[in-house]
Length: 80
Ligand SMILES: [Zn+2]
Image 1: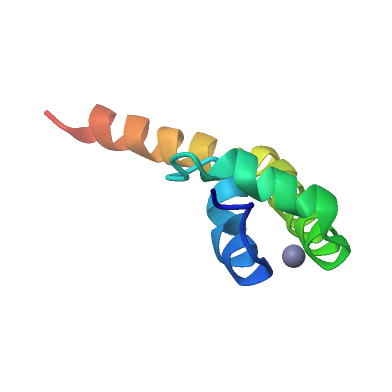
Image 2: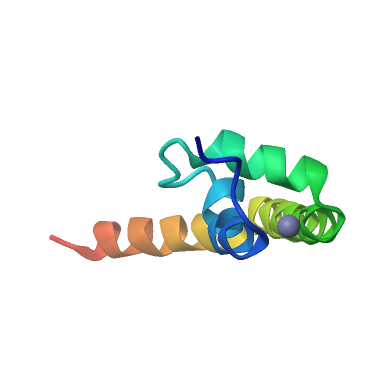
C-alpha cells in the first residue's frame, strides 16, 4: 500500500492539480498531502491565489478580443 505522496511529488504535481490538468488519480493524493503538510499547504494556497489573480486578470482583459473583432470586421468589409 502506498501511503500518500511526498513533498517533492506533491509540489511537482501541484501546478497541474490546481489547473485540473492531466492528474490521473493524483488529485486526491495531492489534496490529502496538502491537508497534512503545512509547508505544502502554504505553497498550495499561494499558488491558488496566484492562479486566481491570473484568472481574474485574464477575465478583465476582454478589450483585446473586442479590438481584434473590430479589426477583423474592418478587414472583412474591405474584402471584395
Ligand atoms: Zn509536503
